[in-house]
Image (cartoon, rainbow, N blue to C red; front, side, top):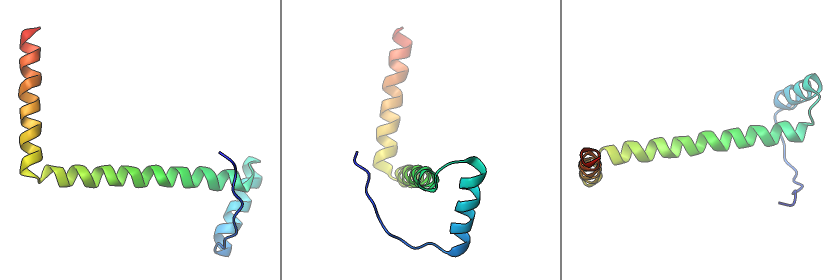
Length: 80
């Protein structure tokens, strides 16, 4: 995908920490920001999954479907 240039502002202490770590590890600041955003997006995705599973756990229809699927799975194991 083609890179996009953007302009934004950050608190001074965040920018300073970014500078420190970029220098310490000899990594460009934009690479650190990219990796930090990707890690944050992964955490958001995990939170979405967790929320959806918690919601499904309280849904009687979902519980019924899961139990039916488990019964089918146990039947398949018994046949083997």
